[in-house]
Length: 272
Length: 164
Image 1 (cartoon, rainbow over the protein chains, first blue to last red):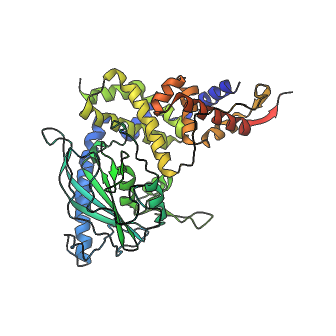
Image 2 (cartoon, each protein chain N blue to C red):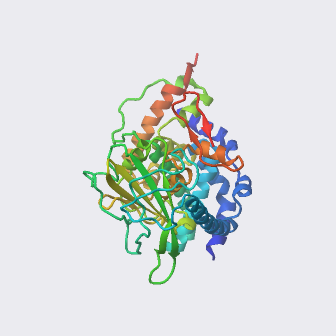
Image 3 (cartoon, chains in turn cyan, green):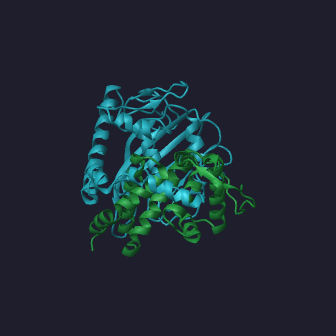
């Protein structure tokens, strides 16, 4: 019977799975890891802000974003799209978040057609910028589950194939409440991202709250799906659809920057 | 009881089982650890907010592992079309066939994520279809359909020879 064969095959491969001891050796006890990740997250955010300030000063730019009429985008480190890329969407300085909002907040309504059908249009954007915000996530009290003092911490113009951004975002369903079962990372609840996409001068924004209980929105189309993990990865590496295997390989090397696989090469080439 | 203690207990009591489930789903050791790690952090955060029943924590973790696996795959690609209709006929003669188990393992790994998940939950976790349906937030008919399609695919890929 195929049922028995399936059971046997699965049991045969049981021994290949990592053990709890191996898992703990790499990830550490839950409590220690939680505390560590919070400190690391805080330290990383501070380091990022510092790095941005340095880069901005090198290029003679102010740490405060310019008004939206003179948009700019700064990559915090080398990426596929280059170090400094002019970009239409300009990141707002602050985001507005409240504990009553189920979905995220966007700075403006979408300018492309049919925004109620999906988070983004089917077209390929000319530029995509990811804006990162860091604030203080309130856990208790009347303002619990809200993000306070969320200010712009950095911007990243994405490189690579920008179709992958809209391809992924178009698949985000407008599904029902998942009861916060998915997409949790407590140390990153204090993060907030905005994705700005430019389509021939028309700008659409997608809100990506770090709060795992909040969904994504373009201001019209709302989804319970939280995109924080994918957006954070894109912000870190400057490319949306980076291969996790490649990322791990690059992380294993000292001083990694942005990895990418050049897909036009049939043999494959990894650049870290 | 503090949540950290509960999670530490859960890891020591259920870590191996969760890691094996995650490995069955993704066929990748590092990926399995990532899935379990995300599930644990998810449980932690949810505990802060909703304080779920401690007794249901292991089932909750299992659900979190499955959800995270499906979420990651969903964002990669999704061309799977699922219906409640179970195919009426299934290729016969399988009982008389010999299965190459290596081939079957590889065939399992190439199944669409939801089909693979249903097989893992049904044959590895030994869950009834009703429970799988609840876990996947789907109808029982959909679960049967997914399983049937997956088995058909495996039949077509994993058979290497007929028994004499």
